[in-house]
Image 1 (cartoon, one colour):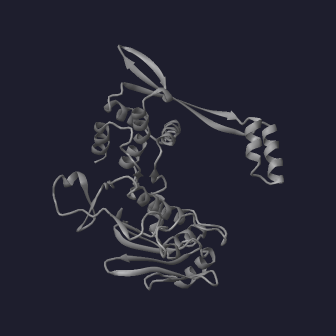
Image 2 (cartoon, one colour):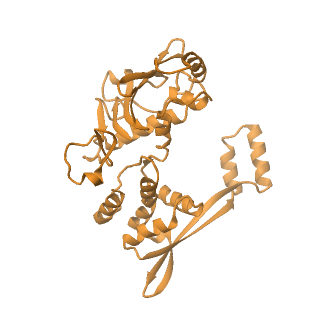
Image 3 (cartoon, rainbow, N blue to C red):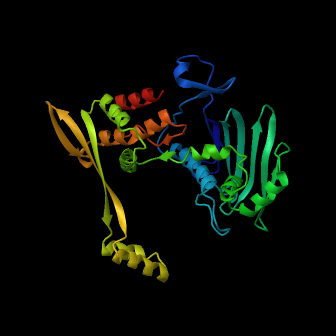
Length: 351
């Protein structure tokens, strides 16, 4: 569970900005809004960012997603660079480092993670826990001239020397220590990794990809179809069923020729061989909604439905995740294409 997330010198954000889930002392509807993962620590289940256009709302979410990305998918080469821009409307900030801070609770223990980086490398990185007093879990510093990371573990960590030696091998100067843990097979001592894994589907900013995702999840039985239908029923769309058909469509000659441009000669040879043997396919998802009207049933392809219906179908999977899994979900412009009543219904169902 996130307590605070801060970002500085990233995209349109210059000064340090903090998204906080800390709750105030009000007891108004606290059974719905508030959770207490540690005694005395009151957190909101939900946070909303609102403001004028171009005020930086989306940038906060992109910063969060960027942090997830660099921790979850470490580079394999030292020459790879981070894909982001610092604050550019200033003479100094493009030359300065970007900073992130994440305070969170995992397994009833409070943690504080901070990281400083530039386009080339992770400069500094630290993780502390409070159990109950503040203690260092690890500290990492990078020698930018030698392009080497040096890692030091806190006094409470056993097998420190072997862990440090192993991790320094896997932690390139452009990898986080968390990424180094993922690449190595050393003992998993950092619950931060579990938090990161809960953010995999975190940043959602386009609902058409959600539509296909929901249909795939229903088809593979990863989401309860009855739950999705119940969500749609409560929204009063007169939808009584969803028909999903997933088929494998062979690539055309033109598609293979286009793809082959990005392959080496050896890769092209293998690609064309697979195509000749008809082993190259891509999935096509066909979704139909079954409507009930005047005691009759009508099948409507999803692309003929209203934007609001399609958006609500897409975000129903988010609602399912929030209710049935231990996950964190962030959605940009959740309210777009939705009637205000549907937006309220979504929030209230979750709470």
